Image (cartoon, rainbow, N blue to C red; front, side):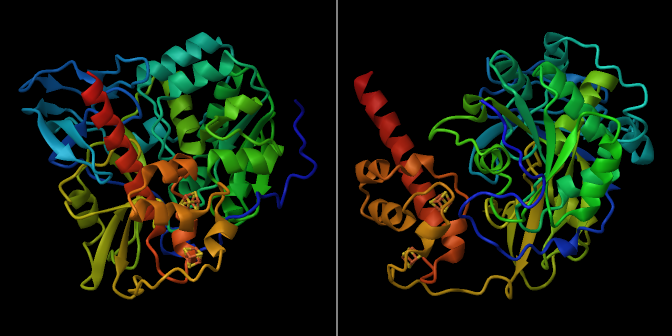
Length: 459
Ligand code: SF4
Ligand code: SF4
């Protein structure tokens, strides 16, 4: 199959929406490094797949970067301590997505790596001058596994599994996703501006494992500074920049593949089905850190934004930092803040317990005010068809919602509810204020619980 890159700018995919991006709140804010909190809570499930198994005991003293949990299942990832300190008795927390997970609390001590030293270790310095890509695919994959890297764009799929699966198949094109199409968030943008070399180095290394040098870093045209920085860093390399039209959800793997290569991933399929691999820019930067510097994944950049937070910022935080510490560092919530969301407004999850920890997959915290959330009174569906026009998965959201309301999960499945990627486009556009995504999520939960009940009866 041949890639059809007729032009390198202004490309996009059919359907989708143009929400107000609101990135100006944090886009110019250089990444700050959060001072190490007195205590962090490290969840033992931070990836899609199996839970990690602790390899430390309570009261044990640990140092920065030490492995604290092993990713033992086929799809799992190890976890390393982002701080030095003493492990406390395990406990349980509920993450913003509603999952109950065990956590390892760690009381930090004085032996921190902080500030610029930490930045230089993880993102700073030269990445390309001495880069010799003389590693084997297996060697790179092993280093990624040892570092506990997962997809940092939000999916949190273990990267070693994804990369190994891709190089065992016939991938001819590698897309590095720097779209960050979710409104408000500027995490990937800041990384592209402040550490473009780590992204280019990671792209070359991941490209090497995939046996392809058709490597395209994909960026939307509302991020000119990022385009400039990546183009400058990639100048002497085979890595190319593809500029895409700004549209939501351009950053979804399926729609990125469609826009850049004109290949259509079959329903229920993945990019490798059309010979393409996709990784996020933050993920490939972590790959460079793991392969070239032996860094485990211990920190990530989080955007804290919205008109409901006093000082919006982009912050580099230890994984396991509690939301309350990050919110406090940003000056706290404004008096008119009414809703706090983990992630952005389209795909994020609202939550109220600020003791919860940030995980490898947390890209941002968005705080909305009363004014942002104009209470829309729900009315009856007027059958305008707008939800159908914008659905990037070509579903009929109005019918899905109706089937869920009637608790008819068979009908919902017939309408392909499981293909919904929860983009939020339908709810965003609906003039009747129908909570379409919430209903669809409810329908999916009903299917899961129905399946579990049937399994119980069968056993
Ligand atoms: S049905 Fe799902 S995929 Fe389609 S617009 Fe709604 S949330 Fe997005
Ligand atoms: S957009 Fe809303 S009102 Fe229009 S058809 Fe869809 S559910 Fe009905």
